[in-house]
Image (cartoon, rainbow, N blue to C red; front, side):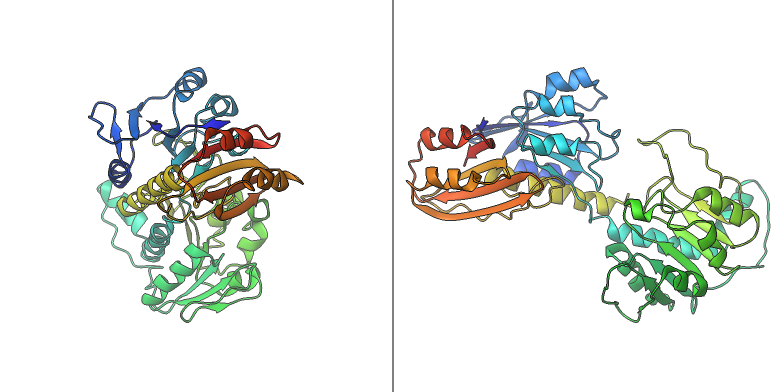
Length: 420
């Protein structure tokens, strides 16, 4: 496929953060109703409604860029929808989870899908800290009571968090930030991670999950979504916890066996729990949801809002929109969920850039280099991921005819080619 980027049309399926719109507009994009003065015409259409698959197929075929947020239903952009997007250069998911897009089909078609999996981490660490304090003082129960007109001033079981021990299971980006925040509250921090990681501050590593569970007053689960992390906390693990301990999960919806947790709370095996993620949770902002934890004392539940803060949303808007603009202008693919990652460099005066997406098979580079050998190549870089190869080539001449691009596009293993 030969992609033409002289005119770029973007379709917004959801409202974007203000930072994203500012970046798009500074790059020359204009909402269709506004005047466009840029030489290269960048236009934006907005369609903030739930479209059927058939409607999406018809709409997306007209656009080069599609943007949506990660609250859409899983695989909202299905294989049929993406296959209709023959003009698509990029898809932007404004959130941490790009599961609303069929990533495999997008990769097969050479369409990078951008997302922002890391900008929410500070927000998640903060809500975990708030859970710790709320559980320690039984604030959730007292708040419910006083809302119902009940004045129940009791202190039984209420403690300070100062001097208590926080055990972190999964010492990655969120877990390590959580540890730093906990230490500012004068808490002791221990952690377990399957990888050998450097402790931050005074945190101490433990050899097993069991070590963390048996000695901690608060246990926070901060693992990523993976088969090996499903039900990492179950009936046996809950039995290892202190009787006055608390369990918190703000990470992976299936990391904790909810039924086992409910049984442990009812039996008084642990003192309380807080969860922001749940198995089979509904997508979208409003829906009905029933949990076996409902109605239990000193149990806090929130509807997956750990990463939903104004600051986090604005950072996501900045990251994803910048990534899309850099992809269109330079061919950069940093921040993609399904694509080889290349941080493209500025295009120098007197050079033209050729971008080629191809199947990662034996002999394909020889075919590409044979075509390029007739030109003065100033810089060239290749990255691969799975069965896809991505190459950026700068040629030091202003006169790059359509012939070279057409030759690359006609190679048997080429997925798409474009020129900047």
